[in-house]
Length: 381
Image (cartoon, rainbow, N blue to C red; front, top):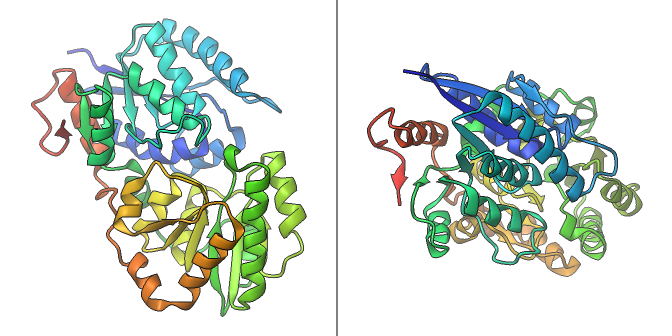
């Protein structure tokens, strides 16, 4: 029987972290020909993840350009991937999450009449402009996809409410699988990270980069960080700053001279996961970190107005801190001064699975294409 040709397409660092273990799982199955196409929507940050997992791309669209817009990304992916699909004709395209690469790749697959599988399907805020453009990207992908790999039961219910029932599987989140590869060993590869003296300090790992936080929200967040650092002499913030010029300028202006706030270059996946592992708590506007940090027993303050991951809020592993300075400071102070409040979050059960999501996804793919019986551990909805 002819091998099932599966093309995984991704282009950003978060996508790569979550797709890498799935690519590795696909390669274990002799009935599958696993191919990888990267768009390089984020060139340098993507390459570091590929190196961490020992992956190389079969195809590289190399679309990144300085000052690129969402329209630029979409049009370049449509053109480049469209030509590639005509050449290789895969049986299935896998995309992840909510990036512009994922949406454009799914649309290209639809135009070429190639089935699309959506990894991390069903996340919703129900506000089309928050997060922007991610919320609309994931809604549009779900209208195109034939296979929907939902991390949680709540994600599957979101799809059902939108009339999507066929091809929906509850698998867990692949980021938990990824951390089996990254949170091993000790030490860091980043010279900047190694140079920070954290002895006797409670480390707060931090990220902040989302487009909807540009401007006043981001300034509020950074002012809150400055206030916390000034009030707590035993706290050390470590902030790998996103390369976007607006983020770097704002961070440098407000936090550049604040003691015990270290602004460093972006970290690879291994260093970032190890940083979170040795941290006291995490403050972030990232989506993926809301899943990663709780698996390490670290409380998370989400620097956003809402989250598409309400399971974590319900489980108590994360709290929505918003983007107002006073509220961020209040919630951080609570975790820094109230041990009971800290333990309640740190010891809550992570709702994102057991690290077997990739195996369930591959089983579901093989079942969908008639290569094996119904998978026992991927719950069909």
